[in-house]
Length: 233
Image (cartoon, rainbow, N blue to C red; front, side, top):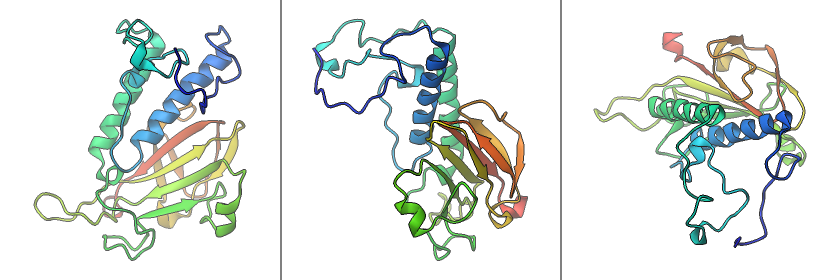
């Protein structure tokens, strides 16, 4: 039996399994989007078992009464599930290697953060590459945003009491169904950025984009860029 019927779910246009490759591609991209937003968020990420390799309960949300193949993990991975598992590993390694993605203190949101940079520890930008305004935050239909995570503004020290300095990240999120053109923020936040991952796969890892560049970001996709600390740039 199913559990609570008030579900916040979306079938991407077709109910149940389908041979429509466009729908299947969107579903796979959404899986990558959800994993990316989870593992790039601050705090402790919690992954339901099997999410890392595309386990599905076919819409059933009451696993407690389903001790059968519906809830068991199938370790015989097909091509797409194996790719999702590898994508999850990439995200886990990224989080492990970069302390700016797992801070132990809340963001200050301003230059007065006590870190090693004059820039804020976090900054939010519109798709036009400008700082978000109060009006931008009140826009009810806005579905795209950029967030800058400053690796030189980490206040907590390392185990030896030394300052922690990390790469900085720029994360472009497009939850709109259509392609949206983003403008990379001003050079003070980073003159050049390297692609770390793209949930759509349009921009290859290692590709370089520069401040002021315009990027067409596929609908419902996430792009992660990084740059080294200013001292090492």
